[in-house]
Image (tube, rainbow, N blue to C red; front, top):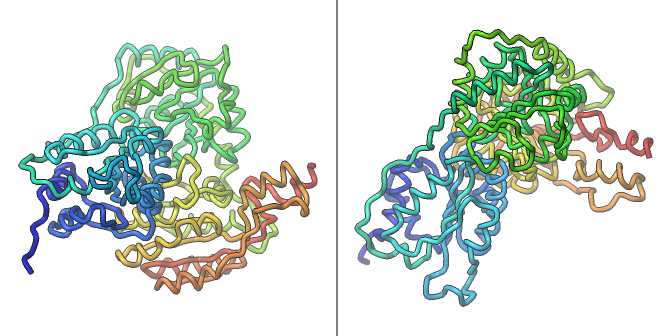
Length: 556
């Protein structure tokens, strides 16, 4: 049989990705892009990670973009593949993370006939992506790929979706890849910086809220220098806890769900809020109340790399459109001779330290004590990955997110994110410890990606908190409709998670007490590959905030 050459269009697409710096692609293979799979098999610059479900593919690509600052790349097939992957596009959009998803599409002659697995991808993904388009001409592949990268990384980062007609990938072309696209660097206006410093100097109780679009190591280090010099309390936006070192003397804790009540009051009562990178979305602000949406006595300075986010929801007194690292460096180096020194930073930090230190309780498996033991046992730069659920609150409250990146968690609250994100992290940082923390309901949504980890030789510890329920929804049920007879739809019958991990070729242990967890963690740290700890807790222990089933019922 004569060997068919790789089609020029497919090879060009792969060459364009290599030129843009792509070194890893996540996929579930499909017949709609066989040509690209063949081209990927003929090169060694890009690592192809074969996943088990397109939701896992998209979550891994989203997480990879969050870690690198360059778009995470996903390839999925049309119809069921793309719709399965849509959750990852939603996460990347709401989390402001760069990502590009290529979708193998129907043949051009089949278009608009409701062909096999046909979807209008531009219409489907348009509302939840920064840009969604279809490449109809092989000669324009370099243009579309470069534009996709530019769109994904510029301003507020986000996802791009490009459909690839099956016949187009077989076309001939002499086009060449375009040069690597870089994120535009925009420094803050000196006049705006002068105005900002004047506003801060006039404030009595300022607070900063940081983390989000375009945040990186440089922004983290320089903003911390700036905040510590002035003594301004620094809170992190929801699930952006690695935006500042937890060892900083001005770190005040995290906003979002289950925050320190003292931090909430501090932000509500602040006469100046400096928001840097944060969108000030619903989760961070607890429904636009922390800080209050309207407050005539408060000054808001909002710094963001995308002008469309400035003045979008909150009325802003001073809007600064700039890159996070450029702004942070300018702030750290700013010296106009005036001395600004607040005591509030140290006060807020002491309040956070007290809040973030677990006190023993009477439960057989004390999750607060378990997280503190993890903190004392694992490396400080361990990457913690989680999906959605009350279980995450124990880590949000008691873990110290040292280093950047060390927190991969969906701000949009998507379940099933933690395991695939941790697989991406283990491949991106093979020298670092990576832990996926998941609830029983959360884990079952993408737990199959443990097979991907094993296949590709990753190292990962998975901690499952199993209370036999969709715990967050159960908590809301108990608040709104308390009583045993009112429980509806939230009970779960789970598999033996420890046995499941062994079936995947991993090591596992079951923990029903705090001491059993400690022993299991020590044993897990001494091994490599997949390691899973199945923590069994009573549903009574609902959240790190101290919420319990009996307590909620007693209030009714």
